[in-house]
Amino acid sequence: MTDTTHPDHPHDEVYEEVYRGRRIRIETDPDADPATETAFTVHIDGRPLHLMRMASGAHISSVCHYIPHRDPIRVARAAVDEMKVGGLAPHHSHPHA
Image (cartoon, rainbow, N blue to C red):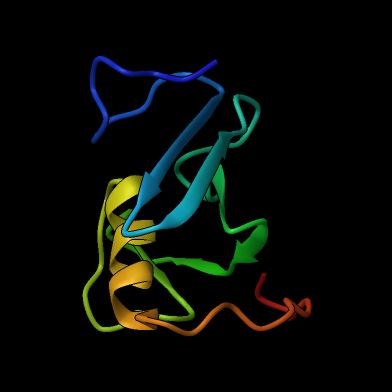
C-alpha cells in the first residue's frame, strides 16, 4: 500500500516513490522498539540503504552521514542527492547493523 496523502511522513507498512529517477522503498517494522531500534528499512533501486540510529532518534545513512534526519523519506532522498549518478554498493552486515 502506498501513502499518497503525506509523502514526507509515510504511515503505511510500505511506502514507495520515485525521486530523481531512483525508486525508494520504505518498509516499517511495527514490532520494532523505536526507542532502541530503527523502525524501518530503506531500499534504493532494490538495494538496502544502511541506516544508523543516533541517540537523538534521528538517523544517518552510510551514503549521507553528515546531516541526521528523523523522517525516513528525507534520509533516503539525501542519499539519492549524494549518490548523483552512482548507485549503492552491495550491503554487507556490520556488527552495529
